[in-house]
Length: 443
Image (cartoon, rainbow, N blue to C red):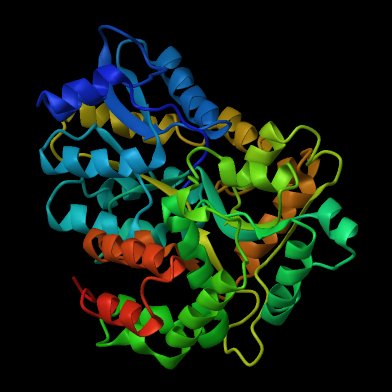
C-alpha cells in the first residue's frame, strides 16, 4: 500500500520509448518532472505523482536545488501502480534512479539481498541528528538483519474508516461500533440507493485493507505474523478462514459499490463516491483526508466527514486499538549510483528531507509527518482534530502492522493481491485462497 491519489498518466512518448526497447532510464525520464532540465544534475529521484502530496515532494526537491545549484536533483513522477512496476524493472536492469522511493519491508529486503541498495547504518551513526529527528518506530521497516538501508520520510499513515455524516443523518443510523453493526448497515443504505462502501477494487491493495483488519480483529496480530515468519500453512489458521469468509459475506450482501472491480484508486474515483454522497463509508489510508479536503469542496470544512478506527469483531482476539498502514515512506540509495550521485543523495537526506517548510506543508494538507516535536504545529493546524486523531491511532496502537503488500516479498505480495481480487469477485473460496497463499510462504 502507499499514497495513491490522482496522478498524471505516463506520456505517450514514454510508452513508445519502452515499446521501442530504449533503456528504462531513457524511457521513463520522459514523464512529468518538476526538476531542472539540462545540466548540473547531481542525482535522480523518482516518486509518486499525486495532489496534494506531489506538491510537497516537489517543493522539497525545489528547495534543495535552489540551495545546491551545482548538484541538483532531477525528479520524475509516476502513478502508484506504474511506479511499482517500473522501479522493479529499473533496479533489475541496473538502471535505478539514485534515490529509490519505497515503503520498506519485504521489497526492501529483496533489494538488500540483491545488493541493489546502500547500507546506511554507518552514515546514520555519523549523522545522528538525522536519525533522531524522526519517530523511532519508523525504522523497523527500514532495517534488514540489524542494518539500516533506508531513511524514513514523509508521514505515518494508518488505515481509517471514513464515513459521510450527512448520509448517516439522512438514513437515521449511527456509525458502526462492531462488525455486526457494519453488516446491519448494509441493507439500510442499499434500501436508500446509497452504496454502503466505496471501493477502488481494480487497484487490489484497497481490498487488502479489509483483510488486514479482519485478520487482526478476529485472530490478533499473531495470525499474519505467522505468515511473515514462514510458518507452514499459516494462511489456513481458523481465524484467517473466518476473516476470508466474512469479507465474502459482505460482498454477497451488497456491501460495496456496484462495479467496484473496475474502479481505480489512482483516479480518486473511490474518494469521490464518499464526498459526493454516492457511498456512505470507505476504508482508506490517512492520506485520503487531504484528497477529500482538496477535491471535495466544503465536504471536510463543513463537518461532513467522519472518521474512526476499524471496529471490533464479536469474540475476536485482536485489540481494538491495533492499526495497519504505512509507518512511514522510505528513501534508499542505489548501490549502482556513482560516488558523486551518492553524496548528493546523502546531502538531500541530511538537509533536504523533512525540513521545516516541508513539515508545515504535510501538516497543511492534513498529514502527520514523522518528524518529532510537531505537537504545537498539529494543534494549530486547520486539520487539528484529524491530525490529533491520527496521532492517537499511531501512538496508542498496541500493534501497528505494516501493509501486507509491503511486508511480504514481491513474489508473495503479487500472489496475495491477485488472489484478493479473486476473493472479492467470489471466484475463489476461502480455502482456495488460503491454499494459493500457503504455496508462496517464505518465497
